[in-house]
Image: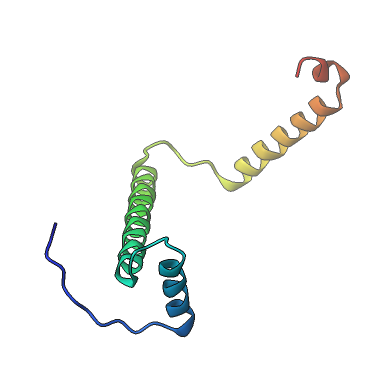
Length: 100
């Protein structure tokens, strides 16, 4: 375990109240433990955010490097309309409901 370094931190009255309540209800042994737990949670959140961003960047990079030809907008819209029409017809067809 690393040696501890003493810091002075200013918090809002609401935060101070929450810290005191966590110590008083026995959730933590001291205000320092509450702050350390909060910082660990913050670090986990930061790590998860960094992982999400790395994943998004990788997907964007893969998309930009994709050599497949793009689909023109009007063709994409037509494909979507056709798919929606097909789904609507299938939902109106009693025979298709028996197989779902």
